[in-house]
Every structure is written in structure tokens, then in C-alpha cells.
Image (tube, rainbow, N blue to C red):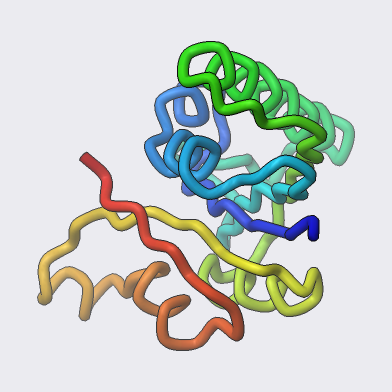
Length: 153
């Protein structure tokens, strides 16, 4: 039965997507033929640091979303060739949403009836995690679906 799997993106750019351990692990290890994969980038400010600018038009954001979907197809094709995964009929989409990352991803997972959420861990220590918060920790304790946390190496 086809599943809906959310993959959280902390940045939305060519380089961030291509070298993303979470995306690669998710596609290689969790996704099955027929699945729907929804990439979600959520941020309170959509401002700086490789994140989408609040000043960008809807057309520009739409183009960026299409680019992520195209990069996902290319990455899947590469992984299929490299690892003989045999994955077919994967549907990709991308959402860029203004809002707190963890809560926004959890809410979208509920609305999409997602079977799983895949996110990365930045490896924050106890003090930094307490001060800055952790998207993966929030999702692991509050999401209403399975959460897979990929350790960044």
C-alpha cells in the first residue's frame, strides 16, 4: 500500500539538497515503490542562512519547490543506478511554509495522514538543545506518526 513520507529540509538550496544525509538515507533506506514523498521546509522567518527569503514572490518560491522535486527525481535515479534499488512510481512534492519548524511539520503530517516523518539531528549537546530547542526531539515526543531521526555524519 502506498505511503506518505515527510522528509524535513532544514535548508532549501541545490547544495543543501544534494549533500543532505537525511534525503539520501530516506530514499535509500525507507522509501518504497509507489510512496509519496513530501519535502517540507518550515521556518518562523523564512529569512536568512540559506532559507527562503520572506521577500520572494510566490512564483520564485514555486520555482524553488519545482527545483527540489527535480533534484529529488535526479537523486532517486542516481541512487537506483548506484544501489540497484528498483524504486519506481515515487511521487515527490515540496512545501515551503512559514511557521515554527517542529510544530508545522507535525501539523502537516497530521493533515497529510503521513506514515512517517524523517528528519536529521544536528547533534546539539544538552545545554544547546535546551536553549535552542530541537525539531527532532519535539517531533519524536509530539508527532502522531512514526518519526525517524537520521544522525548527521
